[in-house]
Image 1 (cartoon, rainbow, N blue to C red):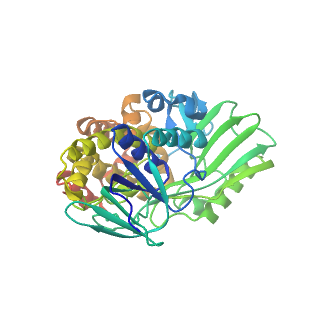
Image 2: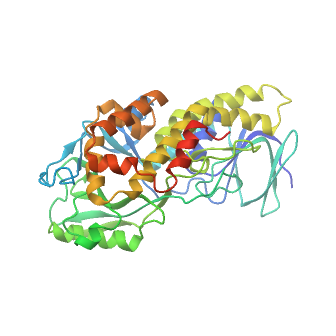
Image 3: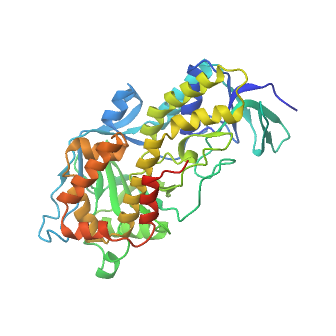
Length: 426
């Protein structure tokens, strides 16, 4: 059975799929979507965003929690072994967590208002000719569109990437519940807590992990042991053990366990997609995860309207086929400047993966000592290329020698990544 040809077929029903489908619908395009399950099935993960980002899109009402008391704990490092272990480093910026149900419903309503049609099935085959793309499902249904957008996540159904080198993965294990005493101050959000007195000297030599923690209010807290990114990744068993020992070291016991965050595996440095292919990607499938911070939602909110507009303008030509339409989308999604920035961020992550615990503490002390606009712009990918290079130079100059030596040493893929900065893949 073959369905009627639409303008765009979006594959997926997660945040990326809904964000781009809603943006395409706002451009007046006829959009359909294909998902394996129910498009209203609740999303399993939490999505954080800085307050300034969410306010820019007038979406603050979609937050479940918002904190102004945002801090990190880095404690003593190689450059200052006598630093106060319990002195917080304040960030002076709001941070929020989306209400996943509200965010999902927000985009679903926009999709429905634009007349989006949902199809359910497993995509198994993709074919393209000069005028139309055809996706065939396991059930034998053929869905046709002038353009297909693969937004199926980090293991995309059809999208190809430029290369497949080692992928650094962020992993975590967390708990939501009540404790015998508050694990963080009332109304506090802890972005990174690298204190590690609960670990043995041998364990401190292993890849570092940090605590990501927040007060949910009403005596409820969320605590998550996290590995920033590593290849191969830190195991969930290690993260669980470290969280349990961290709590015990602080005299904390769980009095009511409400939920276990059983861990996610977030690829941090996926290679860029092959921009010559006749379909478009968006979200995790298109390597939009920030390689050095792991943030994604803010980037999707910023870039979806521009990508949708570029696709709609290209579709104004009735003779434009899938390859032409995809090229217009790719050029807007991954222009040369963003590709060069992506290489720099990957270079930074490659360095951080090699840092030992004292170096990492020193790095973040120096990083968050940068002007707020610089570290914030770095984490959110909102700096221009010139501003990003300036921030990285500023960071290098102000960092202690323990960090500088780590940044200068070339031990792996750094030179290859720097070459991509100078000569970004086409």
